[in-house]
Image 1 (cartoon, rainbow, N blue to C red):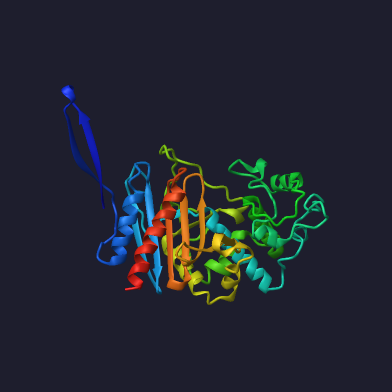
Image 2 (cartoon, helix red, strand yellow):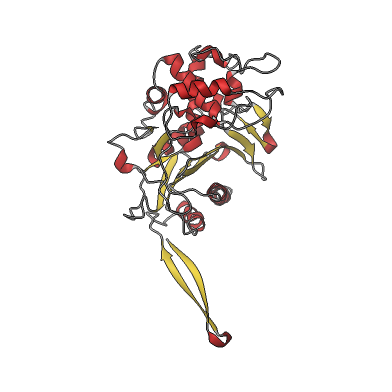
Length: 365
């Protein structure tokens, strides 16, 4: 793929000249089909920013999967990403956590209306509202618990179980009733901890047992072991600085790493909704469909053209990703990058919107 730039130089006497040059961006896109061209056009716009590193694109459309890669996993090697390249997926992890909770609900091990303290090791008298109402499981799932966005004392990259316990004791909940949306990573960290307490297993073990094992998503896990490390793309910020890895001590909020090969399987599974537990996690719990409702923990809504979507995005210090499902079109789009900045999320959203617009138009003709 080529990206064109216009350079203008001013000479003495007010004379100027302009010239175009073309920067080559590595890609494995074969540019043979309408889908190939749609993805390439949208990727070209995204990769115009000189700070971009690598980009992997996954499309699941009418039961078929397509993957495309652009850029590099590491500027020192210039290696093109592949469908096996691993990225941190940030808050897309929360969709796995919600699905694990759905499995626990199906097994009668937990209920949405339970007091979360039932599954924590400690009393935590502070984890209730001014009315005496406890924090319920569903409040954490739907981001209406009024938990802080993060537990302030856990800003470091690594922390222990005792650190989490101390931070939970410090929480003082809003005196208002809890039915107000307030996004919280802390809430999902607690949900992951609760799941480990219920089953007596690590989050990663539960993930493999209930989701990634049955779906044959062998690359999707918490942390990076020696076998998978060669496939991990380095994560960078806007200035090209190498960023530290996401903490995986309490992984329920955002510690999963995955590949596009695996996430394409996951999108297909989510789109088909053949598993009633998947359908449960898509059910809106809070909000207004026309303005974006919240499910467990997906955002569910409609576009300006009234097209139904289910969406989740994620970001860590060096990675950004975006997943959107259009069930009516049996279309899923997943974007994964190893560089992030303040514009990356918006640009990835615009990229998915452009691809959807093209494929929707093709479906109607």
